[in-house]
Length: 208
Image: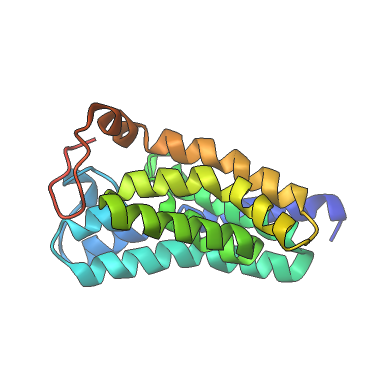
């Protein structure tokens, strides 16, 4: 295959994989109707959890992570971490803006998390540590996600510097470019955070 087609093909494959709305599919198969009509209207695992089915929420979380992780891993094996990032990032965008649902998808955190270990272990370690630390302190999932996204790329750079590892600037800059998308998909959450009305885990969330 011509080299100039490799990255576009990885991007297209990742986008189509990311566009698969597992949360919507799983809840419909379980007879729960359209997940977009309850809670926040989101197709992700957090909203699936509001149906009371933890098993379906866990399945959604794992599948949303897997679809990005799979394409990132496969493309990394074929063409290195740069190609893996393109495929994984495209899956993240596909989840947020799926072609099958009129480009109205989820917020992408599980999908984002799924691609990280296959393109940058330092970024994954930083993001996971920040998320769990912030969640333990606040019990606010959205704040944990936003903080993790903000610290991920600079944190990965710091870790690589301290370990005297060479920086992959393509990956670091690519991940940094995804952070604003995370903030955009969480704009309703961000507005509630600024107002002090964002609910903590286990409390009802207003419809976005």
